[in-house]
Amino acid sequence: MHLKLNRKRILRVMNKFGLKPLRHRRTLFKKRDWETKDIDYVNILKLLCPIRENIVWVSDFTYIKYRGRFIYLASVQDFYTREVLGMSISRFHNRHLVEDALNDAVKKAGCGAKYIHSDQGSEYRSQDYQTLAKSHGITISMSDKGSPWQNGQMESYFGRFKEESGDLNRFESLPELVEYIYQQVYYYNNKRIHTTLKMAPVQFKQEARRKLS
Image 1 (cartoon, rainbow, N blue to C red):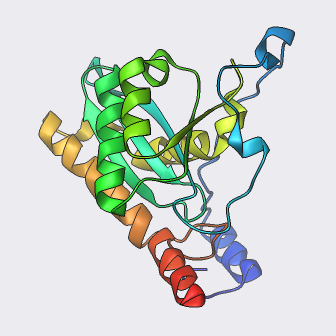
Image 2: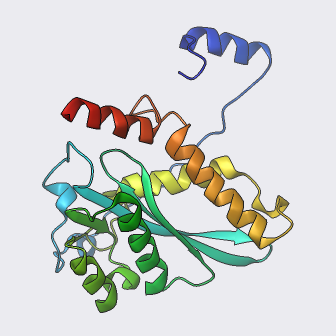
């Protein structure tokens, strides 16, 4: 799509020069009876599919292995536009990590969403996080226990992020790695064509706003 060339021509060139895409490794999940029990919060993603921004945000965090230790990246993404609104990087995965990402999203969006969806991790179930969300007028939504596919948008985003980032040990210092992460998020939001949207998330958001105006 970026080159504005048809798929067959691209494949011919790739075959000619022996180019192959990096294959995304699929994670297979097996459902068990205990994984489908009800939880305290409704799973809003089972009930609606938003048709504008700031209705549902999805959130999660992942670990990044760097030179024998781990750092953690938390993100908040608008379910409709796919834009990463908030993020936080820390050496620890705790409530502060996810709270900072939520605060960052509210600051950048200028408001809270109607709902914010996550898994049932202890960071998201903490009273302080729930109180923070409610203070912004946001209703909590959670996946069923042990059901990561119910937050598939964030799972896919982090999977692609790691895949495209390659070997992060190439960075000589942690500040260089952190700078790279912010650059990658900016690239994803503003320049990288999203396959579903057919354009970058920020461009999609702007087009959606224009149609509503």
